[in-house]
Amino acid sequence: MKTITLALCLAIAALFAQPAFAHTAILKCSDNGDGTVFCEGGYSDGTPAGGTFMKLSDDDGKTILSGKMDNNGEFTFDKPDVHYTVVFDGGEGHQAEVDSNDIVE
Amino acid sequence: MKKISILCLAAAVSLIASGAQAHFMVMYTPEIALNDSSDIDLRMVFTHPAEAGHTMDMDGIKEFYAVYQKGDGEPKKIDLKDTVKEIVWTNPESSDIAYSALIPKRTFRSMGDYVVVLVPGYHFEEEEGVYMQQIAKLAINVGGMPGNWAEPVGLPCEIVPLIKPYALWTGNVFKARVLSEGKPVPGAEVEVEHMNHPPDLGTNSMPAEGTVEYPHDAFVTQTIFADENGYITFGVPKEGWWGFAALGVGPDKEHEGKELSQDAVIWVKALDMK
Image (cartoon, rainbow over all chains, first blue to last red; front, side, top):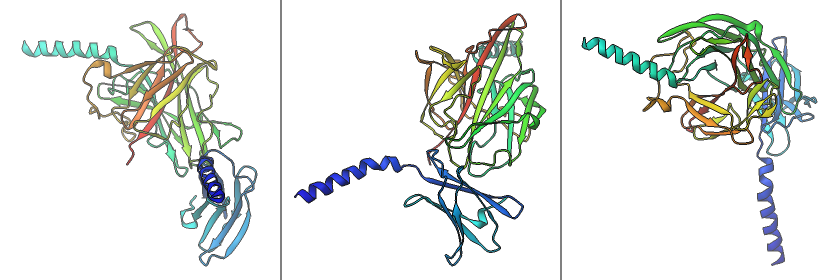
């Protein structure tokens, strides 16, 4: 019985905690036109994404490049020759991706 | 004879109707919630948007800029005066000098809010012998990351929204605060108009046909008042553009020896949920 109450309490607590996670991860990338790509990340509530892990995956899921957002939530990288996906990894539920085909000048 | 009396009647009606129209500094670009940065083609016209009414001389543009902010970052002022060009705006029954601005894609490249500000010159209203200056704001968002949409720019007078002005649904309540020199204006009189004749940027005109028919003159320009803390609330009844003008709230009360109404204008856009 005690276990059930505890589980119930935790479940209720989780419900209440939910609104704090209502924000979504946002990632926007554009081609600088000089062989580099500029990405910006953040959250829909205005929280910056400084320090967030970034990676570029190729079509096989292999990581081509990895790094971190700077303090302004910005990440610039040299444009790979292959098709790739930019992945913003802000932890569970806070991921965002941009396909290289959608990255234009 | 019959024709003449009909004409007289029409003239009389239009005279009465014009009394119900409100002057509005229109600042318009089709999209203000942008997924990606793009060139922003904007128009600035002093007119009566609810009825595609009389177009008036705004006496030039004193200032035109944006205040940009991403998240909690530092706000940054971007001067846009170089992007302005003089045009002629034509409404069904009148035309006058207005302005266009083509803001290049790179200017609004980063995610965040760009609160675009227009400080026009002084329009002289001959019939009343008074000057008018409507300082207008339009918030544009790029990429969904919010910024300073709820912050005052620091204008002599302004309307500061409490709900994202670029992300309204039809039926939302628009809430905002009317400020004069940064302080709330209790009981401020605010006129509200629907952009009933969607501007055509290709021809720089508003069509004669509106999207709504008004049953009575009182519906053309709605009037609301701020509460004792300067807050206004307005339920948005229809999708499209809505303009709010707080009348005579600015600190300047005189221009060239004549009475001046220094007003604060803001434009918001609502979309249907579908």
